[in-house]
Image (cartoon, rainbow, N blue to C red; front, side):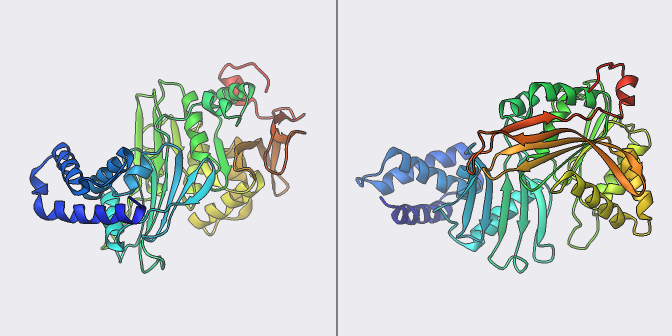
Length: 412
């Protein structure tokens, strides 16, 4: 049975099941059993492999009770990203490479049904008057939806999948992102309550790295996480409050932004504030929180380099307070942020930690940086494969006050 025949059979059986079975009255297990029986009857004496038979049953069942063909894609742990550009164009990222799938949704209406089901799981809504929505799947995977008429190619759905096992520092060491020695340094910095900012481009692993760093937070502290769509997987901390933004309703009311959540979190006696991603005016509130006794804060932001992250921060602060002089903003950044860790996705699609830099202070109109570790390629590097490691620079750490305050006498 070829692909076209298989899809035709799926459509026929699905139509038969939806018309003939009392779907609202039977359980998931019963439905799956009935679908299996009907598939066996319909195939009859025709040759069909066991794998194909299982695939047909899954497609029919998931199109009625699940997310259709998305179910099989989401359950594949080797797929890290799913990009759906209308019902006929489905792309996946697997092992760092992009592929177009041969599968497609039977119609635009079916894709829209799946999108509504996904968005409805987290209590959000997306429609023509509110065609853009960020949400998440029950497993924490990040979801972005754009509907027509904004999306000209049809309903667009992007899913950034997350591993079922939370990222740990040991895993980062195993993947070669950092070394054991650097992990020990980062552990000291987190425990000593340095304010750490993780920067990088799209898909460079910022949220993954942030998740790993949260493993170093002492288990007896009160931690508040603030995200657009909750995806951090912090384990082992009992006194944990996770906050998530909310989009406005169709009438334009009820929006809760990251700025609102940061302001609210300051009244919740936080020992640490973890902001999933800073991308707008909330940068000002984040910096003020860091500067008013909420040390040990962690956050991420999009940037192409450490210096670029600083200039982006300035722009983001101006979005929140347009009248602030640039000098005051730079002084605020220099006193609030202690460490910037820059990540990058390199030419061979590998993700590496490129730089760990200390923000020393503000002098003569400039924020002074002190690079502590820089990624250097070695002789094994080629155009196809990047080889190298983070190397310690000759620069001594300047801001060691927090280390001494926490009783750590080791020099970094």
